Image (cartoon, rainbow, N blue to C red):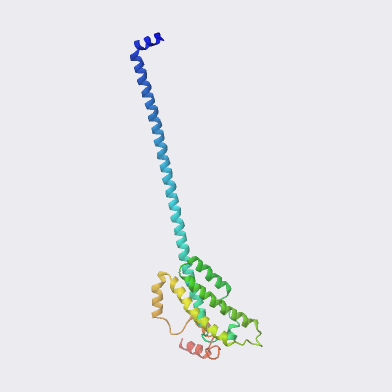
Length: 234
């Protein structure tokens, strides 16, 4: 033991040098570990930022898809409501024309299902109008089914209650389908619709006009005279 102490005292400078070297090595090791940890942290932060950016981009993409799908459904609902409104407007307002309704096929359950589906995609404030419109459309289809269930010879007698319900259904359908169409009208069609309203013809044209001519408020027969007069004017 005494020899070790004597040797250390004799070589104290060397021992101090070795200690300094060891301290330097330890410091270098700590520095290396710190550098490695810093690099790992930087890579982790970069990876986290990449994941966050990808998540944000995916969320924005999904939102854009949902927005485009809703816009497309809104425009489809607009055109669907416009078509149904045209059919309803062509129906007699006060009393059903039994013989013409016997051959009616301008809308059916498929149109009602599509109206309901589009409304669910669009959402918002058209739900109430659609619910009322579906009730009226189903009532009219029920009347048509009852008429078609009777033979041509036997005929179908419309009751006074059915006349009242029919008149009310047509009135509500006209209002609610018009509201749905106006609510869902695409912005690009707004100015066009105003221009059409200013320059609209006095009588309907196209398939709506042809269908309306199937009905007469008094007789329920096709107005041949009006059609011939229009042909002569053309």
